[in-house]
Amino acid sequence: MMGDDDFQHQREQLIRDELPQLGIRDEAVLQAMMSVRREDFVDDKNREFAYRNAPLPIGFGQTISQPLIVAYMIEALQLAPHERVLEIGTGSGYAAAVLSRIANEVLTVERHPKLADSARKRLKQLGYDNIRVFQSDGTLGLPEHAPFAAIIVAACGPCVPPPLLQQLDLGGRLVIPVGEKQGSQKLIRVIRRDENEFKHEELGFVHFVPLVGEAGW
Ligand code: SAH
Image 1 (cartoon, rainbow, N blue to C red):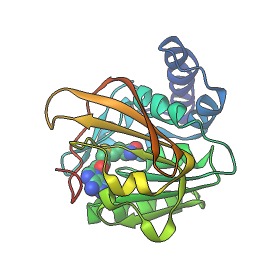
Image 2 (cartoon, rainbow, N blue to C red):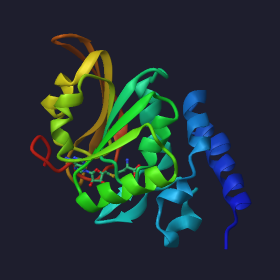
Image 3 (cartoon, rainbow, N blue to C red):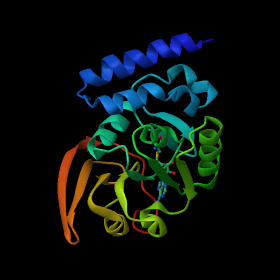
């Protein structure tokens, strides 16, 4: 059995040693990740692997993302403490929990009803009270709550869903993997410079589960 102290030690090792060595330098991101217990977001049988820098299964063919990728994507969002974030692909709720320690409020959308329910319960039970979980097709965003200062998508679509671009605030940032279903995928950052001006940047190669929906697969 692994005790809390062991987890604390492993968490420090992953987040204070490994992630900075792999290029994560944003102190706000590292601090937020230090404050979220990843072991609380995985099944009992995977608890002992919670601090491996690897994705882990969460059921229904989905995964909790690799810690390095969570850190890298959140760093790329350049969040300010007063901002509101939209996340597409709640999964376990882990990335939403990390986001909620940096931003003012997190709205997160999961298409799978059972995953949405369990993430909502888990986040409530753990006391994350600035996160709202929605069950719907995240490729459509949440138009009734737009605009958002930042949008993060945890699943890979064939293109950037147009509704998400429209729901970005001016100056807003969108980070999303785009590419093939089971092949080459690139992480993209889009910054909305103006009403009709979007700057696209490529941040590197990644591997994500498919984004399934109207503006996805
Ligand atoms: N951020 C998650 C990782 C989730 S994996 C975590 O920290 O655990 C990607 C998730 O995106 C899966 O749960 C999948 O069901 C969900 N997903 C796929 N397509 C979606 C869509 N169109 N809208 C919302 N969620 C979607």
